[in-house]
Image (tube, rainbow, N blue to C red; front, side, top):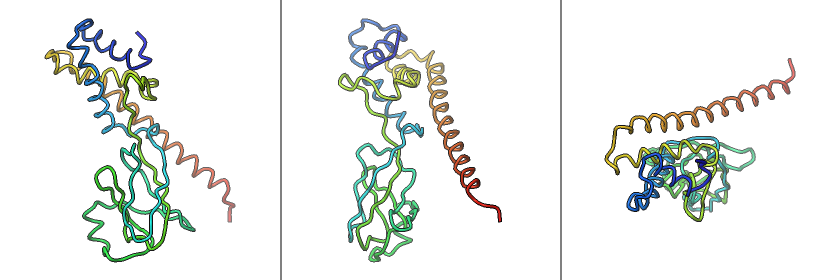
Length: 215
């Protein structure tokens, strides 16, 4: 069976667990998929979920809303001349390190909840931040039948959903099998991304060396 879309995935879950045609089970398959997606978002740090956005700070205001699809940060760079990277600090450390009444160009940031970025010192002017972050894996549904993860890595979706389904059907004998396959899929994706980042850094260093004349 191909796993090309949301409907295929629901059918595959029922088939693999030998529950095809059971109305009660069929009604729960979307729950298994949603629970798998929640776990995937917590654990997946692949380059395919990386994107960037410009966050615009206003003078006198230390906070700005994060993108609605935010799922973890990678870097923040203040778009001044020259550009300046700003460091992450935990919320309590940010409060300890900076006077809340001070103003200037931001030198550090923290994330409050999953919706707000806070900088310190408080901006003394309008600034833009180039913010690199991880995207949430988009939810599958009848109206959004596929996404990049299901298209490229259907095994992660299937095994993750089976792990979530096993306690529901109270048949745990195969749970270690599904869990191992799921863990392998997540680890493979994260390892692949780590190698891509390393290769990119090495290539960038090589290009810099080629442009640097011997003295």
